[in-house]
Structure formats: structure tokens, C-alpha cells
Image 1 (cartoon, rainbow, N blue to C red):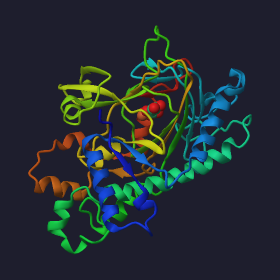
Image 2 (tube, helix red, strand yellow):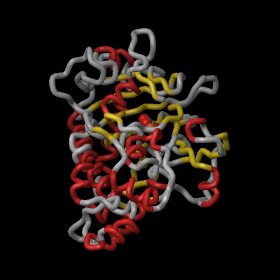
Image 3 (cartoon, helix red, strand yellow):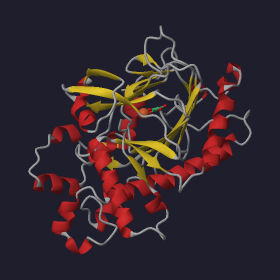
Image 4 (cartoon, rainbow, N blue to C red):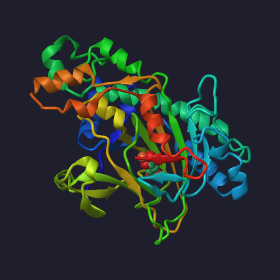
Length: 374
Ligand SMILES: O=C(O)CCC(=O)C(=O)O
Ligand SMILES: [Fe+2]
């Protein structure tokens, strides 16, 4: 059975030795995957080693194995209610407690003030040696990867348009979604101080009587997610419209009615099991706004019923906190040229930080869980 697309980023990582044809093939594959699924495997073996990834996993496991009291020392309740450690079931998605615990780290801010949502200071476990330095190094790498993938994916978003309108740029690598170089600079300026998020998540097996999921169905908020997960099988599920799953011969774990935010047709949940050397990559809601729906931000969830303790490490490469995210002129040109009818009201401009705040401040009180999705 087919899986989500697998795309190697190595032609962009090893730019000196790759050919333009290889880079274009990667760009085209990224564009198609973002357009069709919003989810794919990114082979990063040319960019990060197995040893690095294993170290991150090992440190996370050491932290989660600590006594509850030691973990609570860095509780989100000491801080701005999002930075730090959340106990099992403290995270809520769609009104239901998620069966996971996690450390959440956010981009550091100037003049931190923990009374302001999202504006506190990160909390690092002092009980696990090398935790901070190892994760800081990984975060720096993921920021670089974010920029590489952004540039690589915008290249091919509407090739026919840029071949027709700006043929002189056809050989150039800086064109993007039919973007002029200035437009690409503008988009880069929306992500060059990414308000990134790193989550270190631990999932005990989901009890049969738990009213909810390991992580309930949601879309990611921002730009690009790079998820490194341990080898546990059949935990992360991605929602794919039925026709697309059938056309790609994808196995489904279950069939359900499409969730209401996705429309009314049927869809299936397919597994996104980890592949060696790869992160699972998906796009967040800001890409949907930038591309007026050309790129899909896809629902996903985690149901971990196995009997091991699963660890996953998503890094969210997000827009700048103050970035104004609005449909890209190049996409509007492409959609108008193709005569596509787009409902503009769905994709109204949004300042990323405001959008994020509205997502995470739903439940800022002592008695209710501190963070919530959807
Ligand atoms: O643990 C996973 O596989 C996915 C977690 C996730 O989707 C998230 O934290 O946004
Ligand atoms: Fe997610």
C-alpha cells in the first residue's frame, strides 16, 4: 500500500554538488505534496545524523522517567502558561484531555513578562545533563531546515504561470510561486525571526476508557512542522479525503465522515508511521492563508494503543510573531489566471502572533487546562 510522498531535501542541502534538475524535481515534489496532502515525509539524512536524533530521544526519555515532582519543577504554571512542562492530560484538544505529557519551548522574546500570554521564559530541566545544549542545537538546525524547505517549496508552486509571464526567470532559483525576487524577499521577511515552537512529547499507552485521544484531531497553526518520532507504529494518523486515498491506493485505519471544518464528503484516517532518516512534515494554517487554500493544512491526531511509551519531537517552524499573513500576490495571479473561484472571506489577513494567542489563551485559568487546540 502506498504511503504519503517521501521527498529528499538533499539537493538543497548539498547545493554545491546537486544539479538544477535535481533541485527542481525536489521543488516540484514538495509543491505537489503541499497541494494534495499537506503532509509528506522529508528525508533529512543528508542534514541530520541518526546519532543526533537518537540523542534527542534518549534525553527526552530520561526526562519523562523522572519522578513527577521533579518534572513539575518546570511546570507551565510557573510561567506564561505555555512554556514548560505539562502533566499528563493537561493539554486539551477539542475540549478533551490529551493522554500525553510534554515540555513546550517557544522562541525567546525581548523583555519577557510571564503575565502576558506566550511572553515568558523557557524552562529547561536541570536534572538531565546536556538536555538544553542538545535541544538548542537541534532547534537551530530546524530553523535552517525551515528556510530551506520554504524556499524549495515556493519555487514550483505555479510553474506554468512563471514560464508564461516571466520566462527570463525560468532558469533562476529565486522565483517561487511565480513570485518576483522582491515578493520572495517579502515572504522571507515574514519568517526570518520565526516564532518557533519545540514540543517534547511523551505518550503512555491510551487507556481503553479514556474519553479522548493521545492527541486529538487538529491542524497545526503556522508554517511547517518537522516531526521526529520514535519507531512506534500505528500512532500518528492523517486525515485524507476518500477520493485522494483511493487514487493513491492508501490503506485506511478507519473511515469517518469528514470533520465539519473540512466539508461534507467522506475521508479516511491513514497512518503516518515513521521512516528511517525522515521527519514527517506537514503544513500549518498560515500556509493555507498565504496560498488561499492551494496548500492544505491537514487534520491529524494520535491514538497510541501499543504498550510502549512513545516519544515524539515536533518542531514548528512558524511565521514571525508580528508577521501579517495574507494571500500572496503570486498565488492570486495564478488563481485568477486559471479562472478558479476562491471564497476570499475564508482567507482574511491575520497577524500570526494574534492568531496564536487566540488559539492558546482559551483556557488560561488555574482550574482549567492551560493550553488547548482547535
Ligand atoms: O506526536 C505526534 O505524532 C504528533 C503531535 C502533533 O501533531 C502536535 O503536537 O501538533
Ligand atoms: Fe500537530
